[in-house]
Amino acid sequence: MLREDIRIRDPFIYAEDNTYYLLGTTGNDCWSKGSNFTLYASEDLHTFRVVGTMVKEGVLDGYTQLWAPELHRYRDKYYLIVSLFCPEKRRGSMILVSDSVAGPYVPLTGEYITPSGWMCLDASLYVEDGKPYLYFSNEWVDPVTNDGDGSLYVAALSEDLRTLVSRPKKIVSGKYCGFSVSIREGNTVGYVAEGPYAVRCKEKIELYWSTFTQNGYCVARSTAREPLGDYTFDKLIFDRDGGHCMVFTTHEGCRKIIFHQPNRSPDERLVIFDLPEEA
Image (cartoon, rainbow, N blue to C red; front, side, top):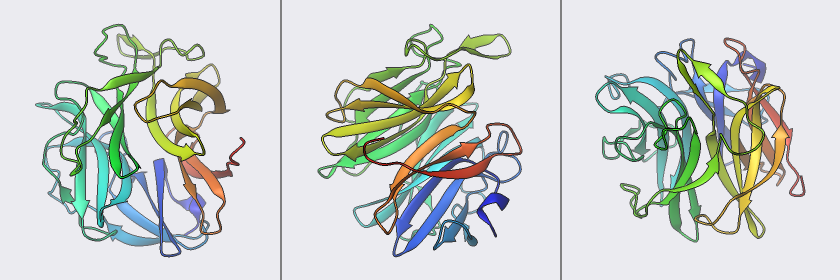
């Protein structure tokens, strides 16, 4: 199938052995049930084939709103990180593991990796010098600051990825970033900061994330020297109703940024742009 035939939010590409693997919030019920965990593969980023379903039916029974899965290889195993919701535990992100890129994936611990009691989503793994870190969003609908400020946090992870080993550090504020606009859900009003993805570029860590501006959903970038450092807003990368991005390098060495556009359902599609290091 062609790339434009795949309905997808929060797209993620993992590259291995001359193959690009695509996953995200896929399927026809992205807001309620959430992702159907379909894994696609391509050699050219234009034509894709279905590899299979990464998580078997029944593994995540009791959870809904399965959002924004992302895939990483770490210490010879494959890890799937996904946001999910259940009434007893509210919303958080869980890590699943497999010996194969295609799965099947099973929960690493069965518990959220994000802080207990927080409303969190969009957790993302970053590894530097062999040390793992977790970036995640404290959701705007119920922020721990109680002021409508959806924010991004970072914390160090244990080497086995089973627990946070440092206190979460607030690094990006949706409310006070200087360019976001508030959104409403029922009687709740707040500011979004979500979809973090970190990548090292020379002497800086580039942290890509999404919020809403007057033009709609967007991609912003902040930078820091170190994973647990202080992050400074750099620039708006895209400001035309598209977001929740990640960055990868092609087999030919070209850096790409991907996200979904538009942000309205059911029209979401994967878009890909070049991202030079000086951009």
